[in-house]
Length: 395
Image (cartoon, rainbow, N blue to C red; front, top):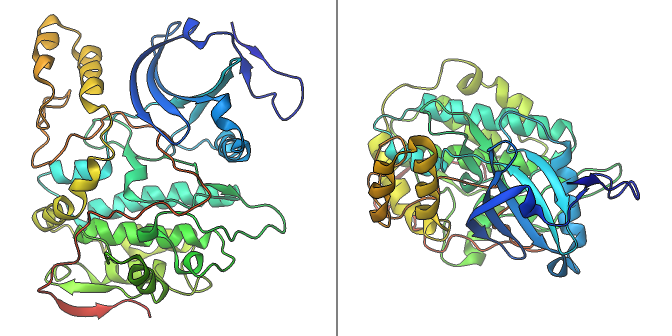
């Protein structure tokens, strides 16, 4: 039985337990990180499923501040579009973060699987992200690592809400604090971070602009196999709306992106301003189907990187089927689950995907150390070569 640790104010939120497996049945490993492991776990008392991040105390030596910061951030957050920290347990050997389990899969998978996808769909997604990040900013929290891989669907339902995950690099702004640590994922990081200048919550707004750009064309605004050249593009805010890929995208969408991907953080839209933009709050987002072009570019530019994120998809799909179908017939049908094209629990197939994607996603399960910039997706391909530049971003 867990008991609250009230020894001091710094640890009162931890529940002490001798053996967490008395309360949770550990099922499968969902992923491993730099110093942690995430498992699919069922709470014995309720039958509810969670993602439990297991952190050996011996692995925390020298990294205590990193995990304490992540926990401090998570404990403050309660928002419908942010993966929640449900509980924290401590045993003699481990720290356990019990996270909300989301089962809808990753953002790109859902877009590729759709047969119909429009600007309006992208606008709806970005509005949810803006609403959640605006909430974080009001709490004084800067995420610092917003990217499509950290946007997960809550459930398999077609109209499922989107969830923000992975707060391993998040930072709480304090009075007089100045953030200057270079962190994040290069393709999504703001120019001022790369320039090693003091920065603010505006870095998150830049990242949302990059995500919006990708959602409307399927490829990243900045690309070069040479990191220094990539950084140079970002530092200059040197991006373009290439033809023919942007020909059918509205001027309003382009204006929205330009206001977020503004080089000067003082001129860049804040979340509140972005939420009032006509492309989000009005009716300027077009309803024309852009699925064919966008999904083809997503498969080309992001499919390979998914292999690095698909940890134990087959095992988790097996558990989902048992939970949703609960029949012996299902058990026999899962035996061939190693195929990347194996159907999801709702019977749909992963069309055109080059690798299975983990339908259960988790918070910070694979976070790298927060002290350095994580590697850019080296498998991404550059923009299509035969394009016409029709509109340059802010320089």
